[in-house]
Image (cartoon, rainbow, N blue to C red; front, side, top):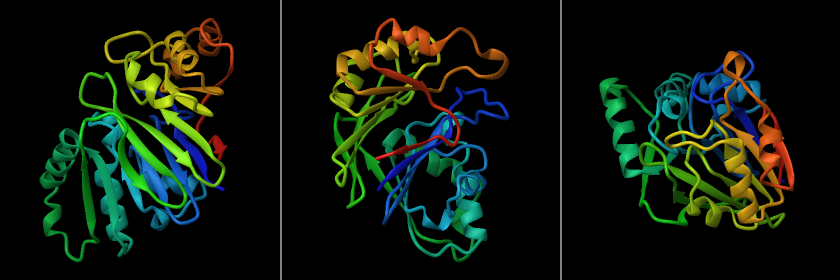
Length: 251
């Protein structure tokens, strides 16, 4: 059975208890990391996972709280002797900048580096990203300050489906992406440019008729305020929960 482990649940300002938002999808044959922040290899180990089992990485967008861990992930894997390929998916805008960043580290000169394969995705709704026996992933553009994608992940064995809004203002693209989902993981930074409030996340969940809403990318620590779950209940009558670091969702 596939599972999704929340590796971080905070917005751009993390705390000891809440790392920046990212997650990993674990199947029998493949392991998919969604965004890469902080010390990715250590975070995977804390979740009880072996970094060498990682087969795929989706980078949703090129903001530091979602992509800053990519250079350390690649370097640590290389230093610890990884040999098998790693597939990296993202929009042209995103991967151009990732490759540019790695260029500053002169990674082309690192000897005996393992294969890294970049898959550039078009900015089009329901773009196929990855299909395997464990899960099927599609991406749609969402409304953030820079080009960004949300994700729809289907699990063939259980016939379950999860959607992830990533960072976005309320938009119809997320409603269509998550329509009928068993789980919607939606950001709740607060109503501002490129972001959504918990109440707005609840409204999206209602329109998409999802079974359960998890709020993520919310303010934590000294910036935490209000009751996000209570706010979302004003616009969504289904089950609501705050995503927490190392929470596991079974599919």
